Length: 351
Image 1: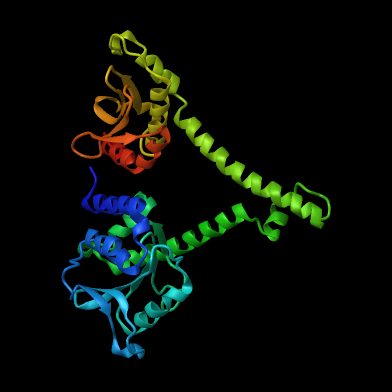
Image 2 (image 1 turned 180 degrees about the vertical axis):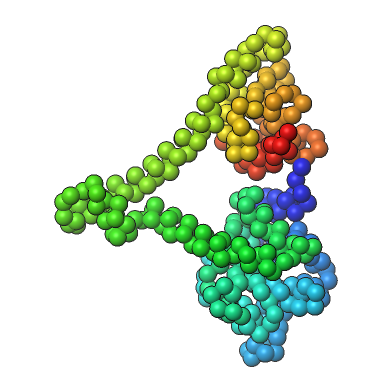
């Protein structure tokens, strides 16, 4: 079952995906995303002494300069928030106001957001001086269980500076390394090309060889990633045939039930997702006339239901108290519900 914070964040995520074109102004981002985001974390957005809009501090020294929001926790300003239009790319220059206010307040964290991307900052490099590199970055339309775990630390009821800082440094460098890897995948640097090619290419690195090897490295990098994904899926589906044989057993089959290729493929996708939590041997398929069930151990533990025997396809999810049927247009859309499928899998993981 999803927590309140997760439900609220998913609602915001859906809103941004569906209506981002209407969030062209900073005010629209504040109203449609930032305030609901703060409310999801448990802050009273209607209390101006807790969520302080247009926050100013005389010590900043620049008359009329304001920060969009300041969060007051136990009598002290602890979080500063600066908002930008959703179409704007967040850059270091947008940190200027946050930088000045961070120095003259007791704030320990600052958030820069355009309504889609959220950048979280603190003072890891130098005490009371805002870092220029965020320690946490996420896209609200694509958040996952790992991000949710970090955001829980910012909830009003659980706000703990030490707990956040304990993982902030690791997150900061992990995020930076991931960005550098992404850059290398798209545009391998000359040094990187030389490094990975030196044991496989014996000629001189002239212009023509450099161009050829850069293309080879780019393609090889992507293929390595794809091979890892394929290996993971292959491992997850290794015992699929065994399960299908069980399904074909007349003792488990209803009359006139035909398992379609779409149902088999849908089952494989759900199984691959849930395998991060459960052994693949526990994930079974049981077909019926009205739907194809993906189960954990037995029919009392539903993981998902594939309602594919009709013109409109649905996937049934069980992360709540009852089945939630969601329309899907293609099997690929099942991946959009990965977090919810894993949440259900966790319920059965210890059983």
